[in-house]
Image 1 (spheres, rainbow, N blue to C red):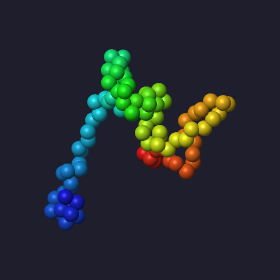
Image 2 (cartoon, rainbow, N blue to C red; image 1 turned 60 degrees about the vertical axis):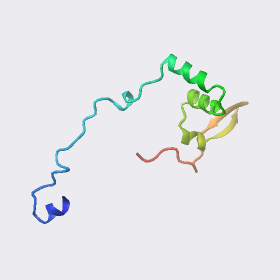
Image 3 (tube, rainbow, N blue to C red; image 1 turned 90 degrees about the vertical axis):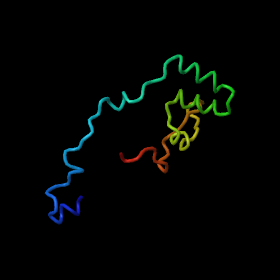
Image 4 (cartoon, rainbow, N blue to C red; image 1 turned 90 degrees about the horizontal axis):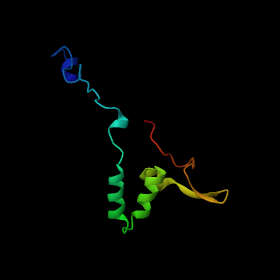
Length: 95
């Protein structure tokens, strides 16, 4: 289409003119939180799984998988903490 516009075959690019997608919900509303019943089902189904500790970390820390992978465990005032402050490990993209 761009080639056709440059060659004056068509006056404008029909594929990209005036086409916008309206959001019907906010980004926060796209994913609903788990209900208490959902969490009970997840907990009961996975409590014997080797992944259960990871699921609990995600559940209570709010970390994403990439954040858990990049974090370290440090002791601060005699308390073990997840530390995401490593400047060598970027956590998010520029976007």
